[in-house]
Amino acid sequence: MRVVPRSLVGRLLAISTVVTLAALLFAGFAIGGVLERFVMTGFDQRLDAQLSVLTRAVRADGTLDAARVVDLPPFGEAGSGWFWRIDEPGGVVRASGVADGVVPTAMPVRRPGFGPGPGGPGDRDGAWPGDVRTAGGALHYRQVALATARGTVTVTAGGPRAVVTQPLRAAMTPLLLSLGLLGLALATATIVQVRVGLRPLRGLAGALADVRAGRRQQVPDDQPTELTPVVAELNALIVQNAAGLDHARRHVANLAHGLKTPLAALGVRLAEPGRDPDGTLGEMVARIDSQVRHHLGRARAVAPGAAQRLRTALAPAVGDLVAVLERVHAERALAVTVSVGSDVAVAVDAQDLSEMIGNLLDNGWRHAAGRLEVTAERAGAMVRIAIEDDGPGLSGAAAEEAMVPGRRLDERGDGHGFGLPITRELAELYGGNLELGRGALGGVRAVLVLPAPVGG
Image (cartoon, rainbow, N blue to C red; front, top):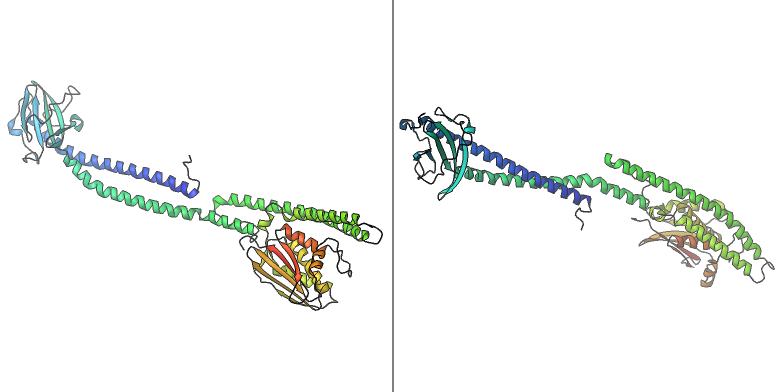
């Protein structure tokens, strides 16, 4: 059973709630105790004043000087609950304010020989406090023991406990209300503090999402001090992964170029009359070439985490390729129209995108009569890139034949017939596709379907 919440917000709020409640309870008890001691001190001082008067009335021989017996306010008020009494070994000498027998008998002297004398109560430690319940309510009293020639004389003065409890109740109501409002204010401040304090974590999550979607290369360094080491480690990890991926891609590219040309040349030589009468060797070469291209392409396109972080703007890539092909095919002046939005991007490596679109543009340039159009549109999670020319076009069977590695439908030029198969294989490695058909211009319409970046 999980006790600690999983979220940081929950943990911080739980800790703050427990600490705040404990602090408020402690404050309530502490302030209540201070108020009680303050009220009780005043109560005891009034009792001690009466005790001081009574002890002066007790002579050294144990007799009572009636002339000195005075009832201080409010001891003289009838029915007030304030009382006093003087006890000697033989019984009650005199009492006032409460009926005899209600007040407890004299307390035993706990420190023989010590206590206030006839001259006054002296230190308050010389009086012992006590409480008793009567039919009229709880009473609080104080006693002193006087050593006389006739024995120990005990003087008691007391009053109603309500003198303490009523002011405390009156004071505790606003105190508890104030503590409740303070707790509410602290809870609000804690929630605001947690929200504001954890906001950089939400910003860090957004920055990581941008890195994964390809909108950023690294997490911004402008972070709170506590997050700076985490951001530094994340950026170092991103750089390390990018360097490893680039290193692997270079090796893959070198291997691809090292194998592609010999296999293509071997396929062309085997296609010459008499070299491969039954076509078995040609099929084997084509199969080897297909497997090499497939696995090499997969190794570079599906690197761990690459698809989630890739983001290549489409318009600049197409513009650069058109500019290059205009120079390569300078003898063929075409009217090229590019309709690609500046915000359109694909989750494809820039090198792979250039290879795929370059193959399609090169084929279109070779076969167009005078016009070539490039358009792109977002379709859900994918981007559809259409390259259309006004050339002779292809039938359905010819379009399928064009996808077979090494099959050239046009013997003109120096190509080997691997451009369209490579483009389709690369598109499929990214989760896309290549579709060939007849377009509105009358020629071939090649639609390259590629994934859009995560988060747009």
